[in-house]
Amino acid sequence: MDNGQFTTYFFPPVRKTLSRVVLLEEASYSNTHSEIFALAKGDDIQDRLVKFAVAVMHLCDELPKSATTSPIAGQLARSAAGASANYAEARGAESRSDFIHKLGITYKELNESENWLRLLLEGKVLPEQRIRSVYEDCSILCRIIAASRRTARERSQANSH
Image (cartoon, rainbow, N blue to C red):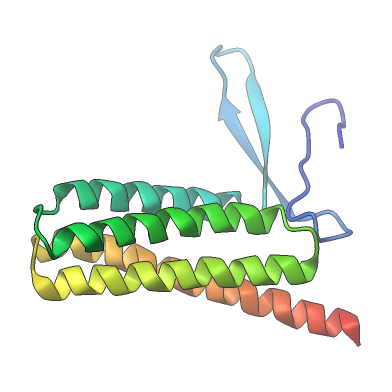
């Protein structure tokens, strides 16, 4: 919807009503005016998932190359990137049930990432704090996605009655 100042995007498309939109005013290249950007609900979670996947990529690059850490690094990198990709898919879901299903896949990918990170922590292959910060980010994302999925399910059940 274009109101002349900015474009509003609708996310996720499974809703028939306008999603909550957060407006951010950001300084433009010139000091004389500013641009207003509309960020859809979910953009912040997508950004966090992308940043998490990038942090995992860097962590995997730092791991010592060995017969035990190389397969873990590959699995960890795939599951972290998969969480971000599946959340993007969820935001483009074709129905509410598709949205809930894809959030479930995102959650499973994050759980897998959390498991690999815990193995790396327990194996002490890098300084604990280097892995712990990524592990904590993963745990937070797990809770966010679980809560989002739970809310979507509850709303779906409430709308079906």
